Length: 161
Image 1: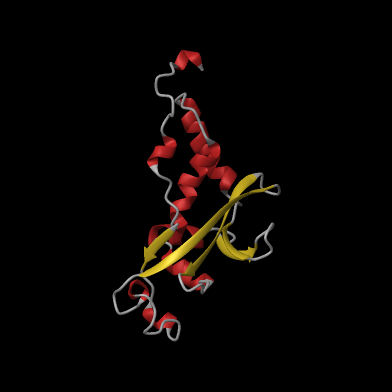
Image 2 (image 1 turned 180 degrees about the vertical axis):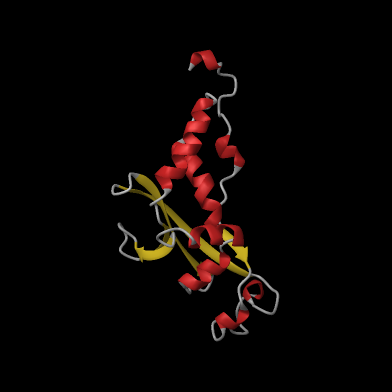
């Protein structure tokens, strides 16, 4: 997935030259196209899914942690930065051995328990991973399309379940 986001042009000095594609040229108030790669892994320690991701320019330059923080929406940033372990961090991907950013899973069980309990109280089916991803993904630019939440078999009666 490719996402267009604003980036401070001063942070890219020397990264772009005049031969670069016009869509990637950065000037005051323009947008820079970024490429995101997302992975969902399971943390045995926290018994919860973990969202790993990396972000880079189309030229292949990886973003720094500070740059990634600058792309987090201010509403999410305040919440994540006040988390006990500074919830957005960077570490080695457990399977690939490469540096990735990740959302720390320390509070996942706590906030998911509230959401799952609420859904179950209303007798709604719960797809835990989809629900979790729709809650944590937007903080780092991953929006889950509404179609993923729709029942693929709307004609099935509730009594058939």
